[in-house]
Amino acid sequence: MPSAGRLLAVALALACACTLAHAQVLYKWVDEDGKTQYSDMPPKNPKGPVTRIEPDVAPTVAPPAPKPAAAAAPKAEAAADVPDLAAQRRAKRATLEARRSEARAKVDAAKKALAEAAGPEPDERQVVQQEMKKGQGGMHGLSTARSNCRKVQKDGKPTVICPAVVATDAYYERIARLEVDLRQAEEELDQAEEAWRRGMD
Image 1: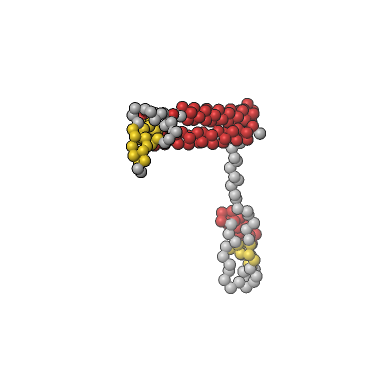
Image 2 (image 1 turned 60 degrees about the vertical axis):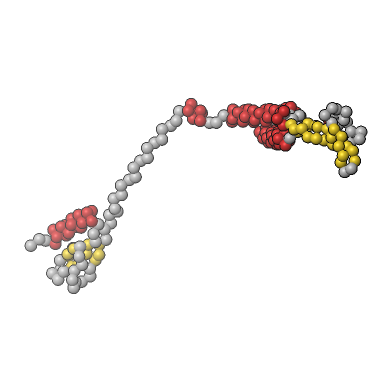
């Protein structure tokens, strides 16, 4: 029959193996014959105290994989990534100046178009019969002595009717559009001037 020492060694080896493999709990007690017993299950109806042996082996945790070291960027490339603030400021000023110049040109063009539209075009004129009053030279300085004038009775009184050339609604609509274009161009110029002043600060 095996000795108690051998049984203890076997029990300890079994405990180590179980602990390493499964980290199980062991129970230790002395049986009726006075021999120390070990088992992973507690004894039934023990005659003496049962000692619970907890595993003292920490679980093996794989160390985290090392992060790949970031490649150091060459100093020349790092310097190239730094924005040139002075160059950006010059580019911004150039853009604002170009916008202001373009707005000024639009205002000049709108003023010129309005000035050249002082009189109606041929297709914007019509002839009307105008009543001439005493002392009136007629529309555009025309005289009542023209051959195409005629005398008529109006409200029982004699009067003179002469043909006159006047502008049609198309002319006035065209002038109104040119005036709107000029106002819009002036507003754009004001905005461009304001943006330019802020950009120069």
